[in-house]
Length: 274
Image (cartoon, rainbow, N blue to C red; front, side, top):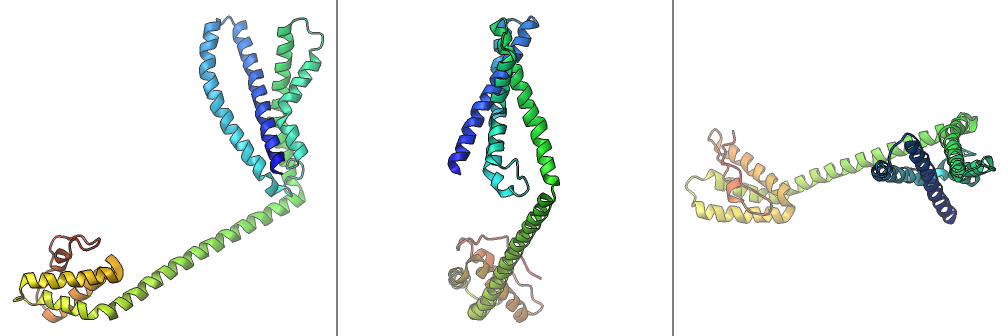
């Protein structure tokens, strides 16, 4: 199968190059018959070659993707997904050139012969690639078996999408549940330290240096336990406990300043939580 696809790719590259050469010959001949000088033709062909290269690259990429994925829709396209049809499709420019050769037997000049070959290539390629192939594909999709398979395939794709969505929602719910469980464990494990930190905040006569050292030790322990989220939980617990102890008294948040530089913690301006 892979060798067959490689042969199709090589044949399509060769036929596309042949098609571009035929179209280029027709354009150059038309410009010359219109009286355009050769240096103008060459200057235009340089830009045209760049644009044609980009377009051909995009076209071949799309065709190769189509060739590689055609096996997925064989039931929907019983004719166009076959290897024989694929070879007919990619060799259309060569078939057009052959038809042009047969039609130009007896041509008087080489220019007339080349023009006939190029016109045959252009005509057959346009007929097969632009008209015949889309028409056959449309007829295939109208077949009862093709329509039934398409409906089944789309339904299966929707079901798989719903399964992936439910899986993501389950993972998100699991993550949220784990975070909630971690917070409950932190509250139980670090409540003594939060109470100690609340005492440092509430005691006005405490030595600020000593209070800062003890607060830093609590912050390091919280960081080692659960990172930044754990530090925030301990800080919030301490602030809440401090409000309960001080009642109507304003509580200044020194913790953000004391813990500055511990892990990912960054100090915020001193505030007075209400």
